[in-house]
Image 1 (cartoon, helix red, strand yellow):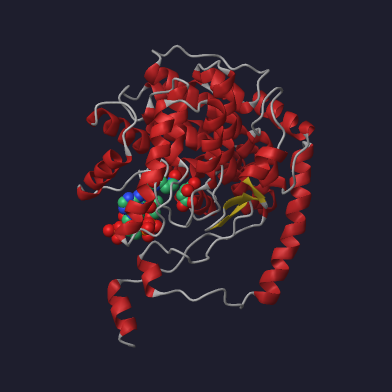
Image 2: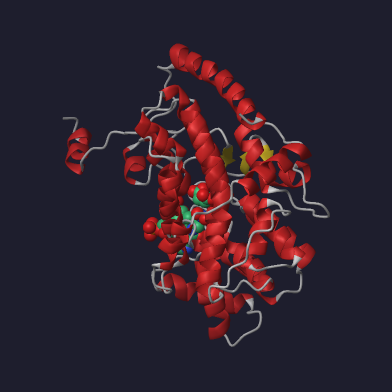
Length: 435
Ligand code: NMX
Ligand code: MLT
């Protein structure tokens, strides 16, 4: 057993004792009341899940094991000569609950490098799809094809003891994270680069190697990938991709099946697909207005048109956040440092100055501020990645870090099958009438 796995087991044993004690001694404590509106409106605000890896504050944004994004950028180990945090370090933090050392990060980099082999039938499954297939569908077909490699599914079929669930979930997690960049890069190069694939470079870190396999040698793009993979990794447990992975995992579906389910949620336009929608919206606006950086007045008119057509303004609003997303701010800081004169970036910033008051004036939008997806496309286009339908795949590779670290915790804590109660509207009507 590797030392990170041993360390995880020690942490999990400790927390298991605390959780058993909490449930035994405080299990009847009421957390909050649930209203009828919450049941109809996406269960917003109902505390119904435990996720160890991160916690969201509506006004401050995400903290990973207590660390904000600016703190992560300061404290997590960097690549040689780099300034952005390595995602390996964030994964370690989310899994173990402590900041990693340089050695921990190197251990993970080389472990994921060693485990990154993808069997040929996965590529064959992707190749069987028409080239017009959306990259998220290709990505997910690749993940599903890779499920043949699940140690958890194999051991379960052999009659695994429930005490070992965590161990094989851990193995699946490490193998899947190691292989995802290869699958994602394969999808990208197949769809957009004539199938000219690039072999991995075992000397690079996980995100640097991903950038390399995508075909980007620019150090700036590698740095962007490191930051991108860190900031998209986790957003506590209730978001669609995290919650879905957790829910499907609660049926003891293995990490491959659970993560693929989460990725199908990420592919929705109100969730991860919003990153492609943002750049599509901006490019269409720029084209309609004849090029250049539009004025605030022009943007206002374009936003009004979008709203009048019954569409949302992509990249703005959030189910939980009530301020500018710190993930947007981190990308803005990256842009100020590396590409302050980029035209698309300037448009993103002018949209940021223009959209919030318009949404606020609608009187119904609870959060008029930008989310993570409002900025990412402009950065990617700058480095030459213009194929915006691919953007959600990048989000997905990153999201694996958080939701799979959480899945390890789910199995280590022996969390139950998730099965909330549902009722009919007839039941609701009778309840309201006091019957
Ligand atoms: N543009 C226009 N209308 C909006 C927007 C927006 N950006 N955000 C919210 N609204 C509307 C929303 O459609 C709803 O209208 P109605 O009552 O007519 O159905 C009303 O405002 C109230 O919605 P909220 O309670 O503020 O938002 P909710 O929690 O339901 O939804 C989002 C959150 C994120 C789905 C919503 O803000 C949205 O559709 N934003 C645009 C899509 C987007 O950027 N999604 C990415 C989220 C981050 N991620 O990566 O997952
Ligand atoms: C996310 O990163 O998952 C999104 O911001 C959506 C959410 O938190 O609900």
